[in-house]
Length: 256
Image (cartoon, rainbow, N blue to C red):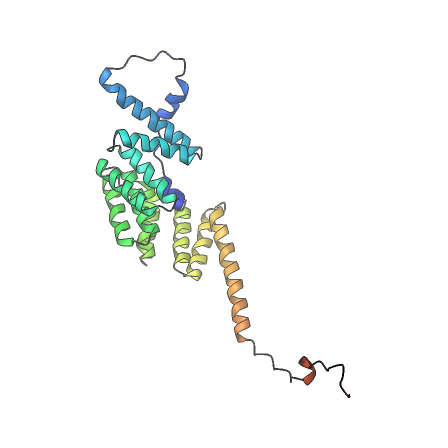
């Protein structure tokens, strides 16, 4: 699928959530004293991720903040706070938390992917490309990073490289669908239409491709209507008659 702003919230599966939900009455083994605080922090992170996934962002944010107050080096809590801040349009906070997260987890490909896509959303294409390439240096088959890098280089007009990256991330049908989106974003609607049709010829069930064609058709209709109005000769002005103006009111003492 196309890398959308939902990609920005891409989460690595958290296996501890299932454990947290299913061990209610189980007899758990005792843990060494030195690991209890770490285990509590991991449990709080798992709970916050679960709550966030249920759409309760404010409650999740409070838990992440409490974790960071106790441990400012918690890369995962900082990462999630960066995502939530970005969603809220708080770019200064997002930048701060991304820096904290990256300092704690400099080799985290998921984090680097999100930072790269955050740069892309703000039009910082060189920074986005550099960060996404760092993510791929760590995890060469990172699907989201490949898709997002395809977006970035495509947005810079390198469509052949964009398609090659999309093909590394997914099948040909989705790759051409993604390329069509890039072309549409660049205003190359003829190319976008051609690539959407090609994607559908490979997979007729691609709903985003069909929706993209509908949007292009609607845009073309609007543009054609505007063009027709612009070419229409102006209507001849009709002569103005005296009756078209408001007549002065005569006084009651008039001789007329």
